[in-house]
Length: 609
Image (cartoon, rainbow, N blue to C red; front, side, top):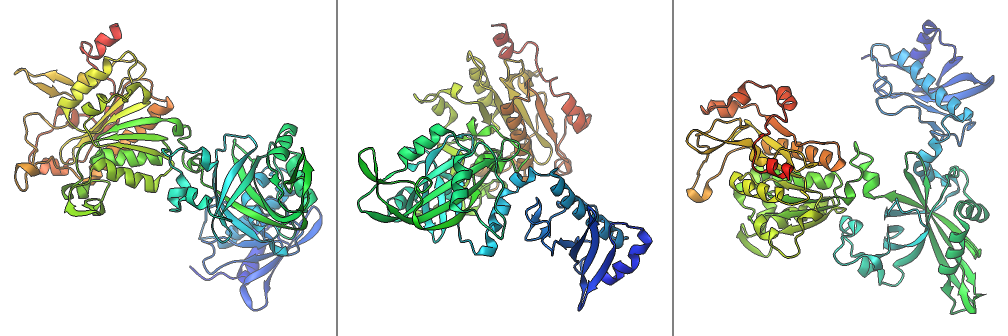
């Protein structure tokens, strides 16, 4: 690609008959910088433009050097933010046309701001604008990492803990969090917040104000005065909340005057039920006042301190709701309670992915140890084989190690591991199966799962459950939904009797009567071969079904069969069933309910009842 400069673009502009750009003049001494003269509402406007040596693959930057449009949405540090990534498809064969299109988008951004079309973008971009607010008047700031219940719009006090200079963590009241409940930010930052709270000067009882209406952030060359702050905040909360704040936020006065630091975290509604956060520090000397027969210091919102200093807090939202909205959105999973039986190659992947999807609580049941033999097809690695307290390998239960992994990566999810069999777990006094929204079986043991399926189906209110398993080598695997909406279809349905009276799996991809078991060092090392890729594929299909089931978008009990390539399977002279050979993946998807047995003694009898 030839090198494009501002001068070259200026020479080519007349051939495009563009009316918006009256002139384009290069900057002296910089071939990649220049000035565009244009008109907006009959007024002359001068826009600075900069291109890089990567132009046109990197779009031009346009700057409002006259500061005529300061305060409009999408104009930050005078730079016009006119595009989102990939919103303008680049045609590298016509760089000048790219330049013209980019300038037109920049001008549209300004026009939309002047007309008010994009006014709500102020609220969407509030947090980004807040970071630059007061920048030119040297406004100091602190950083707050917050995990607050954004669905609770009540005015309340929260805990703010200082962890480093000008760095804080904000949570709901730590005193109200019991010992069993995890504190996500405590794990993320590796800080014992309850212990830090007890240290002098580390804890700040902070006011949280979720405003009822939105506000416009201050500009970068100014900041709110005390009177503006008081008016902005108190006008947007209810009078009964103002009365409550004034009563609850007083501090007992033990001297005539004292330097007091008051902190306020604020959220405002933006769009789509989301909220933007910011905060303020109000520091000054307070004089004691009489209040209901006591001498107190009032909160700074009601009594302006002497020598007042106002600093801003930049708040980063760590709540699960917020983070999930940055995905395709498994919103609503926080209240779900899932039991996963089996923490092997498939189960371990399922557990981590469920937590990543925002599931609120996951109980794990598996009595097996994690060994070196599992490493290259399991979610865990070699660091989970050795016990830190004992160099002897293979003394760590899978459930404990996968629980540790899950807590460290996704601390918003509560993990409850049990290193026992599912039968033992069922027989525990405190186990109430109906408390679960979903049970996932990833154990790949037909005899055990047949008995489990029968037992679960005998319950009056069947808990929806999923059976997930792999077939040998690279031929594929299956995910079966059962117990959903009291519909037919269960694990027992996929089996039928052979002529010899044996049960055979009628939906299997591999023909019966073949031995896939391998032994490397004797009977103790027997295993069925498959790779980590096979595990991950079936785990993804399992979690996809689980999320849809929990969201209510699956109404029946479908069977999701996932075909593998089968190259390794066939290279070793194994035989596949007609179901594998004669069906495409799409045909299997469409045929997801045909596995049901009309005379199934497990789910048919239950439906009749």
